[in-house]
Length: 365
Image (cartoon, rainbow, N blue to C red; front, side):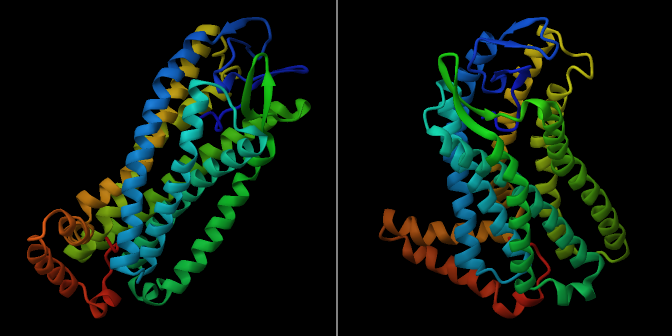
């Protein structure tokens, strides 16, 4: 997938270096021809199988999260609403991967309309995902640091309202991906890549990359540092095991976001500003192309990570998941299993009653 990148432009000549499908491209100076054969072959072998695994495990994990939130948690808190939307963001991201997997191995055969739509879906999943992680962090901050105010603010109604606004903002941020991406034949291959106006190409490239770095890295880092510094101060004054568990899950989600997305943000920044940073030789350019390929592929694995985090960090999630498999899987595999899973399910249900849910400041998982 190469949506997050831009093609090189030289006067009236446009080349699709970011799709890695052409064998030749030019650097910004136009003085040196750089072959991309190695990078293209690397992408064709490396990306399709990785994307396929992400689709399989990402679909299974996030659909289980949606199921448990809706069926067992019943979306009783603002946190549940945000976690549900975060899972939907990951599913949107995953939806586009089979197309990009084929594109990395072959060429774009899906037409101009799907090129624009899927580019927008990719960006919508990216922006909405980080926005809901930020909202989850703010939610923890309010619940721990401003507990009295949180009793009025952290409601399901406000959760739905802020989620609606968040999707609208994410959709707006994704508009450039729909407008500027298009499919066209370049040399002997059809490509799907951004094509900016010739006279504004460099400015758009810089703006696009800077926006992704600011929104996807700098803003969430500022929110995280401020929120968790205040949360830690509060927890030191009032030790509460339940509150610490509530903070732990969201903190781990945030940390894993940075682990998987920061390398790609850095690589795409260096790739876009390689001329300004005096990194425009063919050797360095090839290394940056490969770095972007690898780090973007790593960032997409993040779609599969949140369900794993819930399973290992979220105690409630494990219990609900266990109850689900006992009831719906074991019952079909073994006729004697119902006597085993019914007791566990009743125990889980009795543990989390509606009355306790109203006052529970945990993450919902």
